[in-house]
Every structure is written in structure tokens, then in C-alpha cells.
Image (cartoon, rainbow, N blue to C red):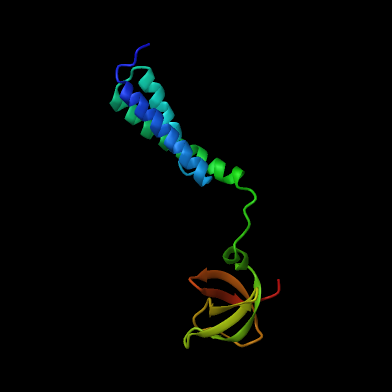
Length: 151
């Protein structure tokens, strides 16, 4: 079969190879979706479909792969992911080292050997040093806590 526009075939092939090389270098599922779209467009080009439909197929296949396979891939291919320091602190019970008073903007605690600025969940709540508190959120570099109550 003779391809009418061989330069377009070569362009799709080069684009596909470039996307695969980027994927190999980054190892982060960044361009594999577009590589699938480029492969679909290449197949349509070889089949003799017009360029406009090749481009539409490229975007459609890329979109479908991105929307429907990426969540699966992220969930099942990255199972060894460990929590970062940030994520590991939320839910942890800590001891207040310096009085937490949102109004006077004071409060500090040491968590995993690092000093953190601490603010109470409720604006009016004051937590004296030595109080146990549970980290419920992190806003910027501040731990947001509520007074710990045994359950």
C-alpha cells in the first residue's frame, strides 16, 4: 500500500517515538497517554484517513486514555509510595511546647524533631504548654490542632 502523504506518517512516527522517549526518561506516566493517541493517529494515517481525522483521533484517544486508565495506573502501579513528613503528621497526637493562642499568634510544638508553629482549630481556644493535641490539618507551615480527648 502506498501512503499518499508519507511525511505525515513520518511525523506521527517521530512524535510517537519522542513521546515514548520522554516517558522512559521521566518514569512518571507523563506522556504515555499522548503516545497512545499518536499511535492511533499513525494507524489512521497508514489506513489513508484524512489528516483532520488523525488529529481528532489523537486528541480523543489521548483524552480517553488519560481519563479512564490514569486513575487505575496511579492506584495500582504506585503502591510503594510512602507518606511524606507532611502527610504523616496529620492525625498524630503531639505535646504543645509553647502556649497556643491564635489571637496573640503564638504556639509551638516539636514533631519528629522539628519545630512547628501551632494554631488551634477554634480561634478562642488557648492550649498551655504540656497539653496534648491532635493535628487535624496543616496550613502552610502551621499545624492546626484540637485539644486531645481520649476516646
